[in-house]
Length: 304
Image (cartoon, rainbow, N blue to C red; front, side):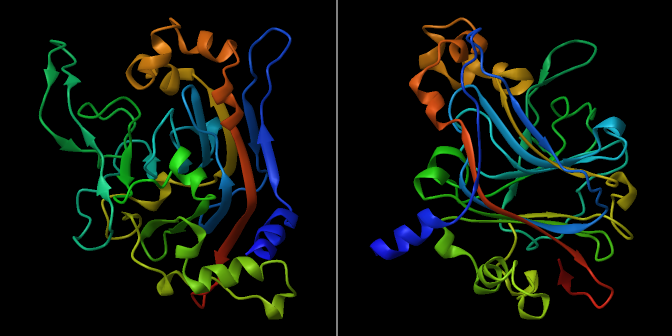
């Protein structure tokens, strides 16, 4: 209804975008949190995310001064025209997901195929799942990490924006030996408990609804960490939240000729494309309704 649309317009949000400079180049954006985490339930309510050729937006957890020793967890990350939500973990040696039981997640593992042999340079066409979080695993792409993909599609980038955004959640719970991830888009698909938790997050403490992932649908990503898994929990620690929007760079830029065939006909490099200030850059902005972080108390419930 029109009233609902007006209510939505009246809600506060955080906008992060980048405009051309006098030199003609757009500056990347980076927003870092101060607080450090060793566990938590991280929820982001997005109305729009940067999308299109040359964009590389991400919402992630890291301790960059000690990377990859303390690990990296990518909650939302998109490159160019990618339209499928993925969760990626990056770590030092000794963290793999090769023992995840069937039925624990609805998504699928990314693959690693065509990796050049370190000695001969000949591509290895064996299809392997990207289940080793070690950033220098010789059988995966450099810094690929272990990557779980949502299987439905249209859960990231332009398709997500056309649906008015969505809600992403990541549960990092080493005590209960897992990292789980969800995406709900459009917003109407989010479970009632999650909707109520977001709606009441700013209410007095006794009136808040606490999120209970046990009530939510099956996760698209499931990673085993901690005791009894193939990934000791200390691979991921002391991390803070980071929001950023990069242009081109080591991933988006390197994939320019692969992902942006139309643009590559006119421009030699990704940076030249961005510098031309194309109309598509109008979509290179974050519109964030809220970020919510909860930590588990000993009685196993989430509180913020």
